[in-house]
Image (cartoon, rainbow, N blue to C red; front, side):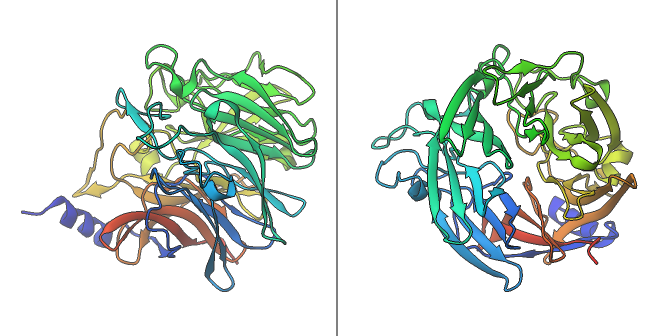
Length: 441
């Protein structure tokens, strides 16, 4: 009798068609866990990334990869960089955000990676293991590309992590949302001033499901002309903040509660609700381009006209044909404008078919995780030409699938970089992989 494993192997051999083969790198971090967002191409042409840890004793670790030499350099442990090595506190286990480059420095934030399971959900630990202190709070950090020195800039009040962040690089303003409560924070780099503007959406992911729980926005963007930052909520509202103001403003006459995105109960965990999953500013059209998580719809948002328009569903071709949602319940974060400043690169999911039937996952899940197994696909969308293309699924040389892929950096060397699960030495570890860029010339 054929097993699931043998059927999947047969599917890879016979039914895939075009495929991309990913190359795996070894950063030397055997405890690396699922990692989100924290990879970026810097001005020196190198790829900077953080590998997460869910261990009580080990912090997340930052590395740099040089595409020219294919060498990896370990840069530092997040807990040590934050000066908390001797605290015996829950460590800085993650960076959950991209790197933002300004005046030769990379700016980013830290997040908690060790959780306490409370009522079936991963929560900020309230009862740390004996001998350990509670999480001190996330830090804003900078890394000097020339001197290779880190600077600890500020710590988030209330012992919360930094789950999302963006930066106005022209003005030196950092904006973020904390986890789990969902406070909006603003840090002025030049003035070394941190402000907490309060909660963005009920009690965020610290709330009680069915009551004041709300999934928090994972992506913000800045309008470069006005310096105003925008973010979404799971209810589908869009908020703005300008550093000259003292309050968050909910936009009128525009929201993300669109029928094509689906129907959600924002009070329940397991999805991002009506939040956009990832978004960036596109200067040629003076619009923000974003993707909704579960549905995979690409849209653009005009802050001046307060208008949202759907562009196209940019999930995999097989997902479009089958009508299925992403198997990763929050949608995918590997969504970024490429070096040509006009092509969107999107690492998304695609269904697996066995003997003509789609392999199904769970109908519901209580947290942001995969409902079932699926392939990883590379999709591109050229904005000026309005051209969608699914370049096919991605596999390792041994036929395994990259899993839990929620980050992307498009290199100038003809490769796309991300962080994915890898089977290594009979265990699962997250590490750096590269995917050939089919559009590279």
